[in-house]
Image 1 (tube, one colour):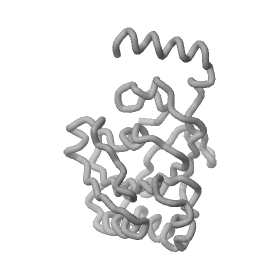
Image 2: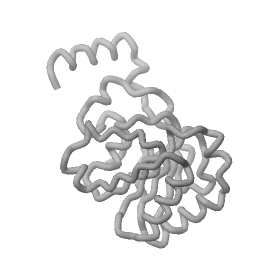
Image 3: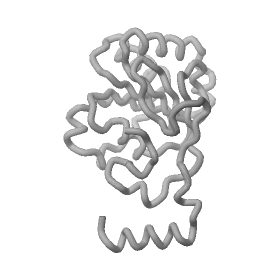
Image 4: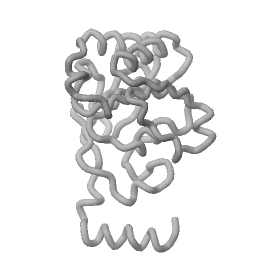
Length: 183
């Protein structure tokens, strides 16, 4: 990181100490930051940035079901892009169907379902059986599944995290270490 960026970040943190506060709080006990759990379906609620998605993509074969065709791969390491299967959808129903097929297939250890840009009313109108089916498929295939949503929609999530604030300049660190996410 350049010296001027580090100085700017330090100056902002001095003047706005709350900018260094934790980004997530968890609704269930256990770890203090979002992590993919093999064989489990987790939910990350809020206006999570692409930096958080990048953290989950880093270092493993992953499928990203992009529910609104809004993902920007520009900041991702080329090696991580080679291990990423990016499924571009435009509607919630398409995204759910794609995640279902990927979890049934069982060839990828992680499936991320990004529904954040979709209208909340569309997501809230989805039957709860969808989430139970995805949870069951993740368990059967021992795949880690994560749903990124603008509001709480996954009724049977093993864990749920809520984003409590916008990201800070520290988020510009490579691979999001400053996001406070578990490796």
